Amino acid sequence: MQPTPDFDPGKLAKSLLRRSRQGALATLMAGSGDPYCSLVNLASHPDGSPILLISGLAVHTRNILADPRVSLMLDERAAGDPLEGARIMLSGRAEPAGDEKELLQRRYLGAHPSAQAFVSFKDFSFFRIRPTGTHLVAGFGRIVDLKPEQFLTDLSGAEDLLAAEEGAVEHMNADHRDAMNLYATRLLGAPAGDWRCTGCDPEGLDMQDGQAALRLDFPERVTDGTALRKMLVRLAGEARKMMDQSASL
Image 1 (tube, rainbow, N blue to C red):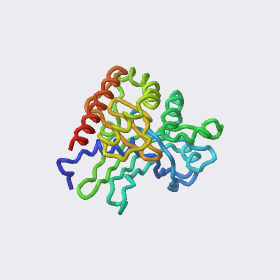
Image 2: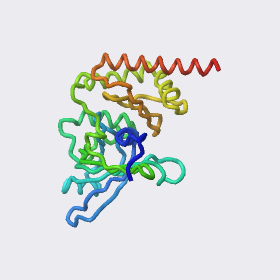
Image 3: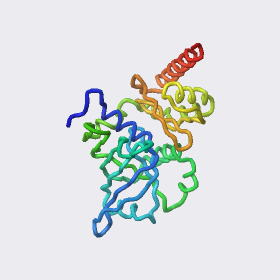
Image 4: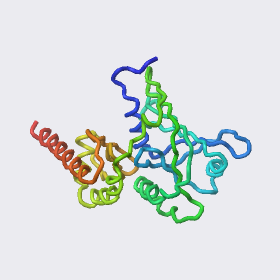
């Protein structure tokens, strides 16, 4: 059955990738090739691909080193019947961090600050899953196979933004927590909380309060620090306007 016209599968898959903090990782057992599944914590690369921090003592790590092919199941963890919520099965190859270790570590610790205790352990390493595709199930008539270019964020031409990301995240968390709360409550309809920024990319801003994660999509693509600052000021203004309108009712 074809998806309904109002359904945007790429946008939903992107949102799940950005908001998910845990997932079921499937690997192939070294030697036998039998399927093996484990629960893992994860974060997202600026392009949306999943980041893992895993121990060399874990079975799934030994499996990956023998055969990097993996799949990752992510779901909305919605209340009620979990089969009524959207979920994706992402397939790909898990690759060691290499030259991206600093970036992967920063993004992962933004999502999982408590993991700071493990990053210095010699047996823990960062991996990035390079997707080859994903299968999205979002309800009746909403089952779609997507290619990576349909659910990953294009980073071409955004080098300046990526270089400014770390400073921008620190600045938002140090000086603009009020704006973060406005984004969450007024633009995204979330409860008030201790919302902080965990990352940004050309298409949006990632926020988190404890293990609750939100994705704020930008109305237009941004590719440098100046454009990012203007976009965040604009969105804060829109959020304050919504707050004022609500107060006047």
